[in-house]
Length: 132
Image (cartoon, rainbow, N blue to C red; front, side, top):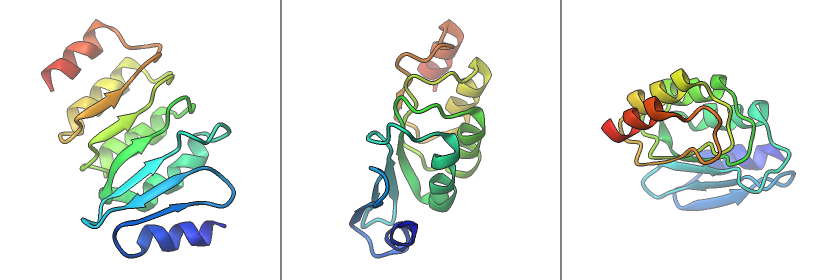
């Protein structure tokens, strides 16, 4: 099942794919950017998402994983290795304040950040978001 994912991720621009065993939506645009949407993956977790993010690397511009228990490991990977990320949804996460602040500081192209129901969003995090 994953072979198809890797082919589509590496394939021609403008393709969309879903893996057979999950509801992961993968879109590779004509401009060679990649969008990953885990919104329909109710059983996904950090370990499941990370290989997709690693494979997309600097081509990743959108990562949607609302309600999925991702950890600082994946978020750190995003801000270190996916410099072109524009859209990120990590709603319902339990990331620390420091990780959220670092994410905002490092992701210079980030335009849409969803932190709804995240436990550690406070005034300090919001100040960094507003100042970015």
